[in-house]
Amino acid sequence: QVQLVESGGGLVQPGGSLKLSCVASPTIFNLNAMGWYRQAPGEQRELVATISIGTRTNYADSVKGRFTISRDNAKNTVYLQMNSLKPEDTAVYYCWGWTVTPERHYWGQGIQVTVSS
Image: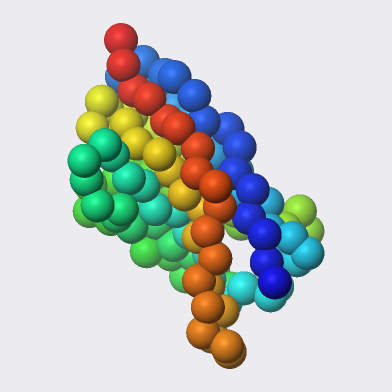
């Protein structure tokens, strides 16, 4: 079993930056891939970025060039650096983890990010 715990959300002005963190326990090496999804009010949950155990990354078109996903295996942590934030980035952000065998998806509890002046 894997637990994911997010931190780092909050309120930021348009054009600002935030860095989200997600700690996986007991170890990040139980997961074949990790990433971030987000869900705005009244919207479906959507992919933001993912990173594989081999550090291959994937981004939604809406965040390319502004967001960067990375991982620190020694700290069992995945990060999402968000720059040039826009009001439309406002959402609850969820950490996601995935195992191949057995195929299973894991989710964090979610953390609020609000971009507003």
